[in-house]
Length: 536
Image (cartoon, rainbow, N blue to C red):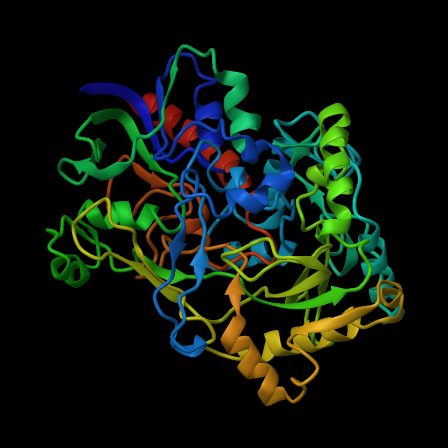
């Protein structure tokens, strides 16, 4: 089976769905969108509380693990990624955070023209339909992506904010306004109590467009190339899709570089070692991997008010089903990370270096999500890691998962920054407002007090909050993979449009920024197409 389209997009995730929608607005072009996983019909995708199951469901989740991490005692770190329409936006925590304006200004200052905050902010607004703040200076109204507050946040979320306030932190009612610092309730990508993935936002409205073809269970093997030009995609089942104009890789920071390398684009020595002929020597492919390392501390409570599972709350959980079915509210509308905060661990910093994510219930250690009991959890997230890792191959088989090596805590003061974050989290978690729940510290535990003991705890239990980026970075240096228009350097008709292009990770959740990247890329692709036509 062979088909021909103007654009072939690989990956129906946070960026790919945006591209399929925006590029197909031109009725004179045809677009194919390829997704390795199934359609997004699984019920646990759409029920927000279903994130507990979606994060460990191999039918809709790649269920990746990292390579053993030297600084974490040789542990592998669980790294879920979405494998369904909507990609990771169909299995994530739905938190809507853009990052700090300086994150984007630094991209531009590094030589990436058009990527400063003033350049990208319009695309955040274009994408957004904010139910509470839409139309103000910071938020969009009428865009495809619905953003709102959870209908019925847990009581303990307010306690969390009050606890931070007792330590002189301010309440922040909008993390996407002028300042990120402070503590508050997250906004989420939901609508009427249901997840609003990019599949819901960008694909559902175009399902009847005649110039769009969406193929699920269509895993890419490699890009076809002719005279240093991308001409299409070979799928793992042997099907071939030809691209008249461009092939666009939007398979995510872990899979897009894998596809490039399988296509013979990458570091020649690495390709040869994996039995792949070098078509184009591009040494940066797979390098510059960055992710947000994180460490959680957990409290157990005698109180049954915090979320959890116990015999006493079975009636409440049953009533929650009624609440959700009749009003899309209650516990099942929770994303389980309803609130959070941002702090600077040193006064001389220009922006936050630690993010806090608060879970209003008891959670078992990953990859498990549910345990018996009640409590609350606070996760300290290292926002600006200096450590850089790599994504590589384990041979020429396209069905084999990539080798993911974040190299956590191997550079700079990463460990010391997250240590400061953990120590401050402990102060907040023991603050007076929480005492009404009769808490006791479960982890690190009362016996873990010295800095050395806390460092050991971090090495034993640090994980990630699932924000891999950077593996096909944008730039003009020798290790850059794409230019500022996201074109693969040295190959015509081929772009990467997803979190892989970030030169440096943003200081917050990555879903909203990747949607922005998709919006901006769509405009660039159309501009370049018009320029080519005019030149002809």
